[in-house]
Length: 442
Image: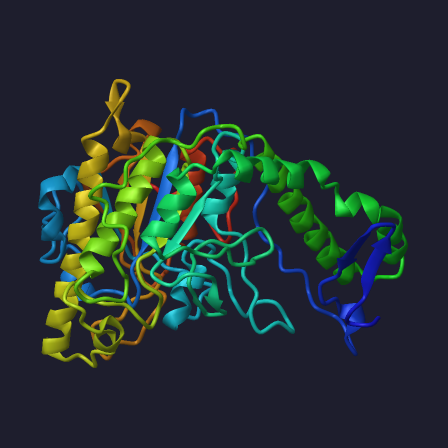
């Protein structure tokens, strides 16, 4: 088949993805995404925000020496002393399928083996946030938000996003506080709404228009290509459904949120702005939850092999510490800086009433990194990943504890992600390479 093969019908055409039948040879294996259908959540507005820090941490200063509810905060985690009963420290977990290094953000919420599909240099899978987003898609204006200090998707292995759809395709991130605010809270005028509505009502399904051509093509393809084409059609259909869903929000006013004092002009790469940029992006995340504009957010605080400390320090360079006491000390200072922003966000959610409980109690916060920079030379391992879980008490999560696991046996981080799915009301017993839910977390 020609690589530019197009399905055509009267008034519609659809360019196909690259299929094995378009190549000189075929034989790629099925990737086995490892998740099953889920039911829409019965819980009342569970929320999820996943906050990612790149380059690992000074793990020796991060992990507490003892375990259980009576554990002693480590030197770094002492920065969270005022909220110690609001979070759980998890140590010894990792991604068995990951090769480590600076692809940690790509796999943090998927657990995928990026080189696990024969013949493919890079193959990701769906991220846990997108399963939860699908369950709430009809209830909120935006099923999910993707935030980062660099906009777009980045490149394979160095993504600017933590979110991947069911085909492993990255979802682009936003890094501008002002653009994010305008998207969420600035109303369109009447002319803009009318124009958008005309576009939506004039559209019909491309897949319906090319149905006969697609059926004929399907008979010519091998099993692997049929699977790939089905994934593609599913992605197109979901995009069409999302556009159709937006039609229902055209006349629903956006929440009225004043921009006064939000600092919408903060720049993520500016050393002076950096702390304020993190705060305003978290503040906008908070406002998105308060207004129920979305219930699912992923926030990559910095891209892997990048990042800054509170004073503009080169985070990536310090992560290659080679055991240097000076570099490790500076790494710990960056770790504490990051935790100070997390502490502020947790307190904001805890101070917000929601019925008879607090907003924090229905908001699950995952915080950590997809790599461990080690205690020796800075080897960037996918084992013993730094991880904190906060909030979600009303959903059944327990906190004020350190749960430690054998890092050499490498229990999968996917066990935590599966636990969060179930506590969100999603009926599944599978996610990625999870072997079950995580003991002691609920």
